[in-house]
Amino acid sequence: MNIKQNKNTGIILLIITTLIFSGCIQNPFVKTTTQDDFRTGSQGILMEFLTNAPPSETYEEYPFQVGVILENVGAYDTKNGFISFTIEEDYMELMNQNDDVVSFSLKGKSVSLPTGDQLVKIIKANTKKIDEQSEKHDSTVLANVCYQYQTKKDVTICIDTDIYNLKEMQKVCNIKDITLTPQGAPVAITKIESEMLPAEDDNLIKPAFKIQIKNVGNGEVIDKGKISDICSSEPVDYKELNTVDIKVMLSNEELECKPTPLKLKSNEDEVRCILEKGIPKDRATYTSPLTIELDYGYTYSISTKVVIRK
Amino acid sequence: MRKIILVILILFLFLSFGCTTKTGETDVDYRTGTQGIVMNFMTDIPPAKMYDDMPIDLVVEIKNKGAYPQPTSITGWAIITTSGTNGIGTFYLSGFDDTLIMGMPKQMSVSNLEGKNPYNLEGGYDVISFRGNIINFDSRNIDSYNANFLVTSCYNYETITSQTICVDPEPYSAKEKTKVCTIPPSYSLSGGQGAPVAVTKIEEAVLSNKIQFKVYIKNLGDGKIVDKNRLNIDCPYSLDYTNLNKVYVSGRVSGYSLSCKPNNPINLINGEGSVVCTVPKPAMSKSAYTTPLQVKLEYGYSSSIQRSVEILNTP
Image 1 (spheres, rainbow over the protein chains, first blue to last red):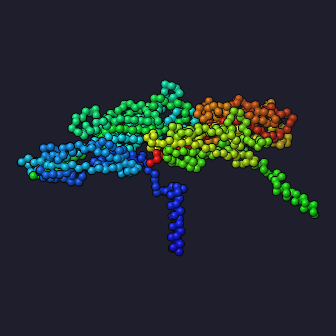
Image 2: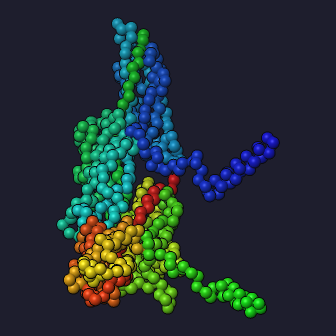
């Protein structure tokens, strides 16, 4: 009896498996993953010191290692990122002077790399002699990461060609504000407000969008062209901070955005974009994709204390 | 005995070949219901979720659940009586970004779609198919797009109402006379007449030299009434209050054509309206009798169905 039951169960499972593989029924256990599924979270590159590199305690005139692990937890591939190490030069020195700035590339999360890429950078250093009268000295090791990153989001928005609801045709959508959660990057698009404006030409409407942008990460937004300067000893101009380049496309048309580049004030600001060429009013209301791309540089630092004993 | 068997055999043969009419065939009331042309998307065509860079099909079933047009006795084809139309109607597709889904026809027409009739109690059936191609989303840097497909029908339709009424030239006469009928306060017509616009009530009044009928009209369907003369011009993209809710009324009783006020077209407010029609009163000497009052409503009609499809960039 049991053998017969097992045989029947086996046949049923075989039929279901065959149907799933043949595509006749959808496998309920498999959800299709797209790149959009990875555009979550408010971090780009994460950086941490390796355990005991540097050590919390060491001795004077003694070699030690400083190591960081970098992890791209966002959804954008970064190239030409930089890590700079800063030490108290009176008490420590790098064994290789070129190690103070190290470049890196890291792939972000994607369908083919769902966890994002990781990288470990280790540099060698030496402690120097501490003061004669001191038993110990508390020193600090600082690591600073600078990288170029991108935030991308596309949303389906409503193009309502009948601003004043004069037409009696059913509308497939209505204009509404869209509130968004962070998109797998330290700078996020938080809200999109749509508006259909009347044009000079009475036969057209101009879609306009107010896009709110916010620094949701734990670092600072920098000009994407000044990444290497920020992670070096080059002086930094305040104009190079909080600068975001914006590109907004409505279907296949690029919108005119102001101000561009955007300067974030208090870590957030908004940009207004409009399709100046307009859309004919005689079209029915329809949905269309609005694609927003933010390009910027990003930087943040971590530090740890090293006690140098005699 | 042989002759009886022969007669029975001949009768049996006639019945088997359908040479005798089946009793009750024409008694079926097909002029009921409140629907006209009904549309619905075929299940999973298109599916709720699709990928880019592939063809997309939208298949819409069209059913004529009303009683117009009727097949002619000569050809058996349903002929639209309103001039200047593209068959029974036109079906318009909108609501999506045509730079992402390319090549989809924007409109399609259906030529013949007979209404319910004694020989086809279900009404006509047809299928229209819109086919297009979803572009490669990588070329536009798009991850996903929620496409909305709105199919809007614009068609001509007619409602024909036949109500037996009582014609009594002297309803207030004090003379004791046996009458075959008396005029009720109103004739109530429920359930529709096989069309989205229906006559819901008729009130009869006998005046000094004419009989007056107040005909109540209501839109019982789920769509909009469109002026039949503007149907091919304004429907569906330019519909506004100037071309909506217009119905043309005509009718006959006792061989007389109804003379109605206000003049055609009648404007319905909130989907309802009424018209007052008159016919000359028969001679006083005539006693009360029953006769059919036929009212015809002509109009355009428009309704919509919508389907959303999430289109994803192929991973």
